[in-house]
Image (cartoon, rainbow, N blue to C red; front, side, top):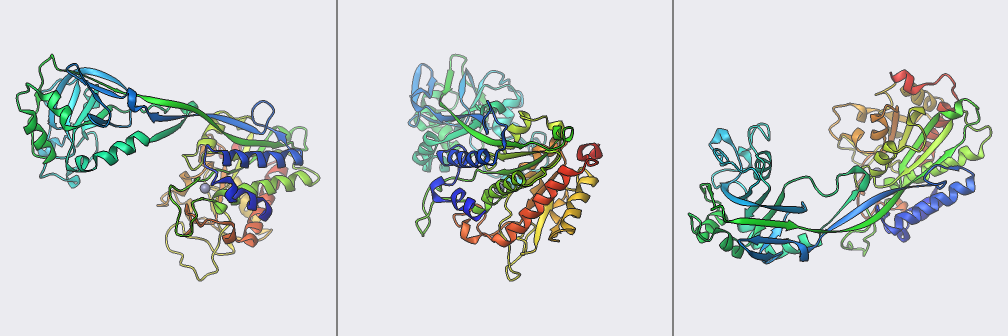
Length: 496
Ligand SMILES: [Zn+2]
């Protein structure tokens, strides 16, 4: 595992961001070993790779325009768009301060029909109100301007700037021009589902409010000072068209998937699943004091990546093979929001209802010697302990088997404290197993805890406790083997 991790966590792989060339090299490394070990490729088209199509969107400033009364304003000088792309066109309703808190007398939309309209609003709360006034349930007791406008059928919201926006206008422009968003095509969550928004510059306000009941200068000053402002409707001839355009780039990233065929002619139709995520955070925008900007992710989740590879190797080289088949998935994009596990469980390459249990390994390479501080609910475990999460949640038989294997082997201290549904760290929802559990697969998640290098530039191989890693990996190996060999075991059936 030390040799494997020396490659997986090396600077050469540049932090294994999904998607990146470094991550693809890690995938090729895994596939090369899996082929050597004689495992069956279980990705797409007879390969070990299950590709996931991605779209990267970036604002297209040259096609992002605001037209007010026949005058077209350019991105940056005239306005700054929000994150949602699209086109909106309509007549204009000025709502003053758009936030609603009816119980405090703030209800600027009352009596106004904004259906299909472009709503213009001051930014934030009027003077005299603060975040503390947003009490109760959002959407019922109070609404932000965008939500209120959207709920009432508006087509877009144009914000007037406050001091903060004006003071940082150039920086805000550069951030918006450079911002990219990345989404998985199959999840259909790409273009943004919110309302089109933009913030207006002083020249845009002048163009918009020419001929309005209140002079543009006064509207502008009131917005900047967050003074209360009364709503009014602009003349019907005032039509605004906002277009926020994006440029799209198609990319892909892959899960790495392999199967070790079971030895029993019948039980081989069922699977024990092992998983880890082989992606990490990539490169930091700037180097630290040591000149390092590579998130090597030796523990997160280099440790799980090499653990699952070592288990695949051990199982492939041992005779007899387990009776059930063993499914290995190295997930991509865990750090981006559990992409790979969500995608795999939505597009499984083996029947998911034949998977009797899933063992997820995410960060199992660290421990403390007893002297380290152990504060907090996700505290780093000591050398003989490991958190085991979720094993008892879905199936008593599954949980009992996981505990029994350990008791008869290394006798590691299993810490079940994160399994409490009221666990404030909500670790149960934070790694790949959650998507398997959602589809009825009993899961156990192995984790040695959060340390000071978590998601930091110092999560390096030198800090891995290989002795502890070995014992945990041997325990997971033995657990997979026990599940694989027990003909009576039916984790799924037992959970029903
Ligand atoms: Zn992780």
